[in-house]
Image (cartoon, rainbow, N blue to C red; front, side, top):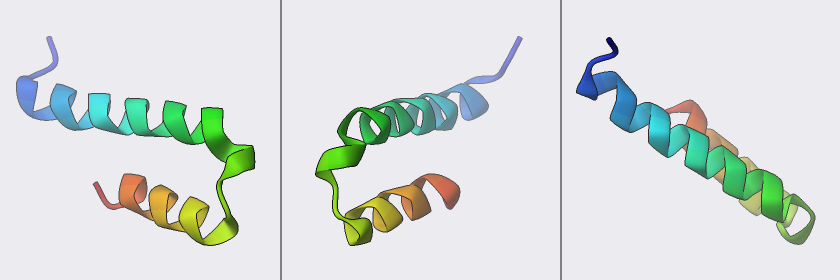
Length: 42
């Protein structure tokens, strides 16, 4: 069983990456880079 400490950040990363994928074409390069960095360092 995965502990709560891992599931919560993982859920945030997965939902963030899903949103980025959905709106990729609408995001400018600066926003893409910023959002991907947030996922990377979360």
